[in-house]
Image (cartoon, rainbow, N blue to C red; front, side, top):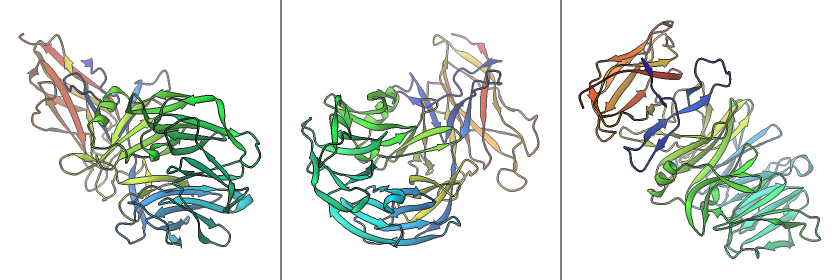
Length: 478
């Protein structure tokens, strides 16, 4: 049998499905770093969700998450909520601004100030970590960041940044205001990275640093002016120590960039960029990042389009995540991340639910088992007819559960013989009951076609780990 080239690989669905229609949903590729490993790549399952707490308010969206010095917080709707190590929650403040559930941002000045600074609904608030009180401070601030003892606030309406007093978020210095003049496009997004302030317009980006100037100590780096801006202000995040964002420029939009020093490096693919071009809007894109088992993930969700795409900085590969609605994969429902008390937490974009996220979990936000899918590359040879006698999947078998769903886990394979235009019936086989480590997942007598595409789907609650696939073919009539 011959190895199926590219069966273990990233998502790449080109604008022409007969060119490439590779899909990868709720799996991610990992490179095997051992040069003597059995395979070079493997597909591992994305994490599942388990509800650990809820505010009890159906439309109280999670809008930001933050942890500092052993304490953990998230913004749900108009409330600030603290999370404790036993997964209980406590409302710490109410009345936060909320514009259509848009994301909030949180910063802290640590032990020196004992405060959180929160932008929410274009307003700025301060939470006193000692007194446990939430106070409104100022209007006109959509994003914030902490640098060198100062809180930095962005006002995109006036294209200005403002500073709080040193180690005191509760007071803004009325003189410490800087307005953009290096570019005509207004600042619309901001993030602090490596003790620098990245300020994104719709077409260009500046980087400011602490020059020790009087009144307003920060100045733009005179050697840095980036001719790429940001399309969706809340798409910017820090991924593995570098800013990453959904870009925009005078030439167009819809490319994801990651900073390489001060140079924006394109990390999206033509396939993803085509996909994004079909969405009604990209302006509502929201992103968050997390690290698990050495992988640094950038999770980019488009709420209107109902899609979530994930970039893995460790491999440079993209995959899709989503919850199956019976016909298609919608976007994942969660937003934000914090690692606290040894747990990965994430919140719900549509409700007050708080989740534990873990690769040990196999369920989605509804408690249903995650549905995972791999649509593999085309198999064709000069458009001649090929007979397919046997397909064998190399995966970790014998992982069945002792009882219930998953006690005899099964895999579904279907195929298209016209390059992915139409699809045949579903064909099922077992992945081995518990302890059946010699089981083999094989499909036989698969017919013939000139341009064959295979699709694999699993729906049982076990850790599905795919290593490779082999295919047995024979020449057919032309």
